[in-house]
Image 1 (tube, helix red, strand yellow):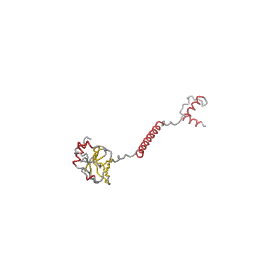
Image 2 (cartoon, helix red, strand yellow):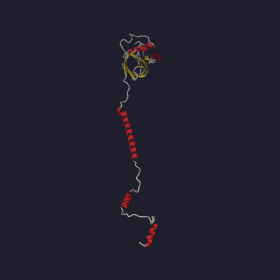
Image 3 (cartoon, helix red, strand yellow):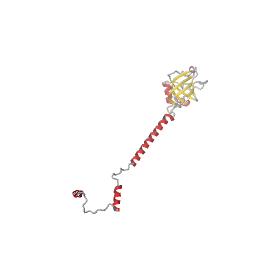
Image 4 (tube, one colour):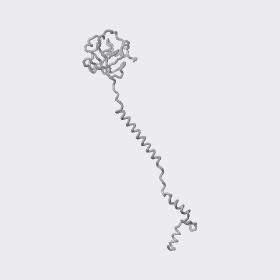
Length: 203
């Protein structure tokens, strides 16, 4: 190395020539060198575990909500039986002694003799069987949508008998499973409807 090069290097050295130095072979120098070598040159990223854990927990909760919703949907479609109408009510619309205890009609008496009372429309007449769709329940049988009457042919010829015609509307009261006659049941007229309304106004 030439003297000129030494001079240039000396001028580039920021440390003054008068500063004391220590040999690299000393124990303190070796410890300092080891510390420098073990120090990372790039800062570590901030721990991301808490955020990652939060994201995993959120995803798990969302999956659980979806699973519960799907389970409820399946239960509603397959596990829960469909609500069905109550079975039709069967009544006897004819008997051997229907005129034996005929009494005058009044709303008060109607309320006394009727366990069931409804307004319905005849949908079918098949021999002795008459089927009515219930339009309004006045008393009892609220969940049933149909009433089936056993109505022997020829009963309509008797006093107080009812000629059932498909499509016509009737007001029917019954006691002990049998239709009440003597004006307590019949075609739905304004007068009979008013009597039913009055008789069952208090439920």
